[in-house]
Each structure stands twice: as structure tokens, then as C-alpha cells.
Amino acid sequence: MKILRTKEAVNSELSILKNNQISIGFVPTMGALHDGHLDLIKKAKLYSDYVVVSIFINPTQFNNAEDFAKYPQTLDKDMELLDKTGVDYLFLPELEEIYPNKPRLKMLFEGLDNTLEGEFRPGHFSGVGIVVAKLLNIVKPHIAFFGQKDLQQVAIIRQLVADLSMDVKIISLPTVREGSGLALSSRNMRLSEKEKEKALIIIHSLSFGKSELLSGKDWLSTREEIKEKFTVQDIKLEYFELVNSHTMDKLEKIDHTIPSSICIAAYIGKVRLIDNITVTED
Image (tube, rainbow, N blue to C red; front, side, top):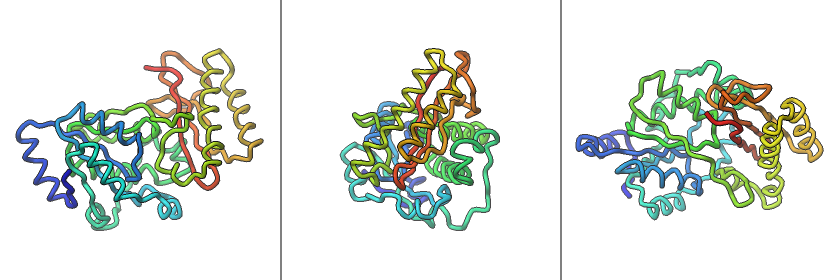
């Protein structure tokens, strides 16, 4: 695995491959790698000739300074893992390489970014859009891979790529979970074993909500039932919503002609976790 730290190094290495019609797959990450990231890398290796992984903790997508400061950093372990996985290139830029100056640009994704995560994390998706645009412009991959756990983020990135006519295919892969059902996340490293058990209310609630909907139960009453469970267990629930999987529009019932998902965000102790489950497919 070759480590590239600058835009110039990336361009120098990858342009030779592209000129020889060699396909490049890209997996952008913020490090603290887990099996969910490795699943993306495995798929990238299947779909492309060479695989580039980036590790960059992007400050512009954090609206909470404490969350940014406490984001897990396990670079040595990450690099060892990537090397064993057979990644060809690791793009490991310093902050100044991505942001030589504080960006003045703000991105809006009308209808996609003012709900769910956008409601509780103002400015988050502008930061996501800016850094993903930068990384895609630097690496210029043929295919980029993202996890479905960040469903709203995937919708944002698809819109970004479409609106800016970027020549890259976006592939979203299903959420990878622990045996218990807990969605893998870098933030799980901050959970105690007791908190991990407590966090199972998230997948249990998603599964219950889906089951109730598919059996014909009313969504609004089902949502209130779930909210009560969080209240009883003294867990802060930020949202539990049925949405159009592509537009993120909130729904009040399922329509089998519309792809839908249930999305959730909750605090387990001081750690904020998100997850989702597909209810109806395209």
C-alpha cells in the first residue's frame, strides 16, 4: 500500500492508471475503521482494478466541537488493517492540504438537508458536501462507495454528483451490523459494554416499526409507542421518522410505489448514534 499525502501525489500516481484505462474505486473514510469500512473496500476491489481509501477527519461537518475533539483516532491500527486488506493507495492528507483556507462556500440541498440530521446538525451537510466534492475532485475515481447507515448522506452525495455533473458512479452498500444487530460505527468505540446493550433499543425499535407498518398498523401511533419506550428507558430520542428513501420527505404511511425507510437518531449516554431500516424497496 502506497501512502499519498498531497493532491499532487494523488494526481501523479493515478493519472498514469487512468491513462491506461485502469478503473479506480474510492472509499472515503474518517478513520477508526471497522468491518463496515472493510466491506466497502472488499466491494471496491471487486468492482475496480485499483482501490484508494482516504482517511481525513473533516472538521467542517461537525457542528459540535466536543464531538470533533472526541472522534476516535486509530491511525496506526487503520493503516495496518488497510495494508492487510490489500488497499493500493491510502490518501492521508493534512488539514491544510484539504483546507488551505477556510472555505467561504456553503452548500444547500433543498429538501434533503433541512430534515432529520439537517434539523439537529445545522451546517453538517454543507461540510459533507464540500469535503466529498473536494475528495472526488482530487481522486477522480470511476466508482465511490458509501454505507447505507448514513442514508441521508448518500442521498446528499447522489444529488451533489448529479448537480455538478461529476463523472463518478456512487454505490451504496447495506449496513454492516454486529451479531446483536447494533450497526457498526466508529462512535461505538466510545460506548461501554453496558451502553452497547442499551443501544440495542435502536435496532429493536426499527424492526418493530417496520413490522407494524407492514402488518397494516398506523404509523403515527406506532411512532408514539416507540417514543414512549425511549422515555421510559430515559434515552434521548432525537427523531424516529418514516421517510422517502430518496428524497428524505417525511411520510405518514407506507406507499408500496415509494421506496421508504425508517430513520432514527438517539443518544446512548453522551454518544449520538444513527441508524435506519428499509421498509419498502424501489
